[in-house]
Each structure stands twice: as C-alpha cells, then as structure tokens.
Amino acid sequence: MDVKTFREIFVEQVLNTIASDGYTYRSTKQMFVKTEKEHLFEIHVYMYKRNTFIEIETKSFYGNSIIDKELKELGIKDCRKLICGGNLNFICESYFNEVFPEKYSNLIYDFTDDVSLIITKWLGYYTNIIQPFFMDCTNLEVLNQIINGKTDCIGFNICGEVKYLKSYFVGKRAGMKDEELLKLYDEYEEKLKKFNPNYFSDFLKIKNRIKSNLLLTND
Image 1 (cartoon, rainbow, N blue to C red):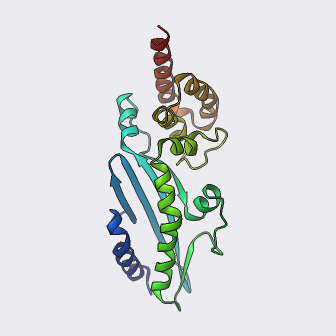
Image 2: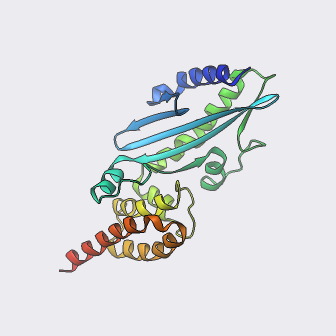
Image 3: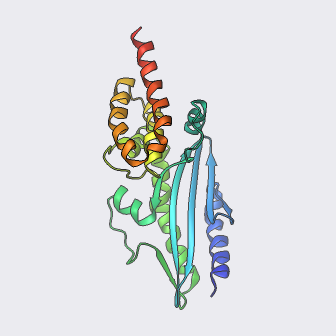
C-alpha cells in the first residue's frame, strides 16, 4: 500500500471518531486541529513508507490565543504560536511517567496487517495520552507547571525562545506574583543570552513590563 492511500484511510477513520470532539483535518500540514475558545490543539501525523511497513509519527501541540495577543500588544510578533507538546512517546514517558508500550518511538503499520488494527491502536493513544495532556494544558496552574516547573531545561516547551518569552504570561495567568515572575526572569535572562540572543530585546520588553508592574504596586 502506498502512503497516499494509507493516509486517506487513516484520516477518514480517525475523523469518524475525533470529529465529534471538534477536530478537522488540514491535509497541507498533515494535522488534525481544534480550536476551543482561546485553546488551540494540533495533532501532527506524519507517515513514512519503508520497505515492508509505514512509520507513523505523531506530535501533539498546544497553543493559546490570549497569550499570543498579549505578546503582540507588547510588540512581539515573531514568537511561535504554539506553546508546548511533543512526540507521543515523549509525552507518555516524560509527562505521564509511563513506559511507552511500543517497541519504537513511532507506530508501525506492517503491510501484512489489517489497517483497522493500527488505527484502533492510534485512537487508544489519542484517548489515553493526547487528550489528557491537552486537558491539562487548559488548566492554568498545570500549564504553568509544564512551562515553568523546571527552569533548567526546555522540557515540553516548543523551543527555548517560546519558554523564555511566554513563561511570564503563563505564570501571570496562573496567579504568580510579579516578585516571583521577576525572579524567574532573572534566572531566564542568562539562559536566553546563551540559547538565542536574537530574542533578547523581546525578552527585555517583557521583563520591563514586570518591573513597571512592581513599581505601580509599590507606589
């Protein structure tokens, strides 16, 4: 079976289940997408044909339009819209602390198997890994833990600049005080300089916002 035919069958049968959750499919980006209020959910499914099987790579990402709007209001327009996520096995093992049951990091459809078997398996991971992770991301306090819980690594953040630029808005919405946020940004400042200094001017816009808020509070 060629990848095009397999993808068409896969997408059709998966949508039969997850369309009721609000997902649609964008073929140009090979992803299932859903928007619910300010929450954006993307499930990217890439397929690669090998000699005797098709490899199915799944990545799930969360974004938030309110945070993106707040960034733009500060004049920061180049930051990616997605916040956090990762590969299926990474979320399973590093977020839920469970052993990923597959032999490989991606799912494998063997040409000798019934297509419905791999689709059923994928839907099981959708129910037990992807959906619970997305639900946690919609909880402000949990999202703050995902983004700011570990300050010494990128973790589930899309990339370093996303972590360092969006962490303020995530933390603020979760109830962190400006004193805590300033301390957090003091720690992130040196890390961003080393990671990608191109975003440092945008970072300072946010840090100056925190300082201004503190001055207003103390007046």
